[in-house]
Image (cartoon, rainbow, N blue to C red; front, side, top):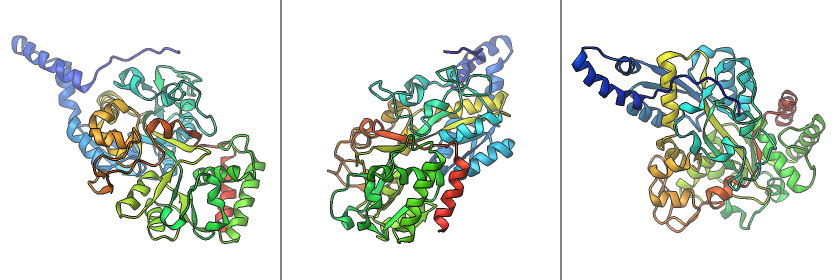
Length: 428
């Protein structure tokens, strides 16, 4: 492990604890210490958190502001928009909420600063996939695509470290194992393979996410499962593999196989809820939203495994002094349980199961994490009933789902070429 010089460790909680001591001393000596100044100053701090709508939530920002005593503001943007702000307008945000593959793309621009993991209170409780790059049983995770561990640590020289160091690029906060959404009531039989996305049986009733880096991965999972192509690495295709993949997709599109290419959460929900689409790329909260309408929608684990992704919070380089202290406080708050429970009720996972468990009811934990049948009505983060007692979560337990990830969202070496070819496909 590479070592770096650590700054003085201070947290709001420890400072406030010290403040009590300082106040007592002040009464005796007439002198107020640094913790008092720190506590008085940090209440005037405002942090801007820029993140995608699936990970940055107004409810959580408001709760964090109330708990921490300083203001956190939030803006939503797609990952491409966040990357553009980080690269071209770094002073317009304080906290960048990035996918790991996006971190791979922007880190070397030097507009973000390393995070001292010794100042992250629950760092050692973050699941091993992020900290160590291993599965729950200690076995290596799939490296198809951008395994978060590959870009988790930095080397102090502007690049990523090959192993664990004292400095992180971003602090992992949210992740999931994605699969296909299906309407079992309209399909009427069991589905167990990604290849079903390409099955002529569902011609005109399928959809893909129109984000090239993710849509191509879903398509590749299906194409490989059908036996058309065996990729060397689905997450880093050669130009020839991209060409073969796009050729298959264009043929399918011209045959009328795809109903749509969705670009927003609401589109994916409406296509599925309306029955226009019966199998498609989908996010877990979208499945939850469809189910909350009383419509049967499944997020079933398939035999070829899941496509994984993860987001984390990074600190911009311009943060220093009290504002940097506040950023550490905010990141610690995000791992303390409230946020993990909120995203769990959408079907996502927080990165510290121990604190998430403490913030969920026992029945919620059993349903979302243990894969047990719901003992009570299961509600979404906003109080809507999304599951009745007796039904278990699609795909089983937390470890079964996350441990079954076989590819990760990614940035390919031929990323620009991929985008050009993907756009040709969508326009064909």
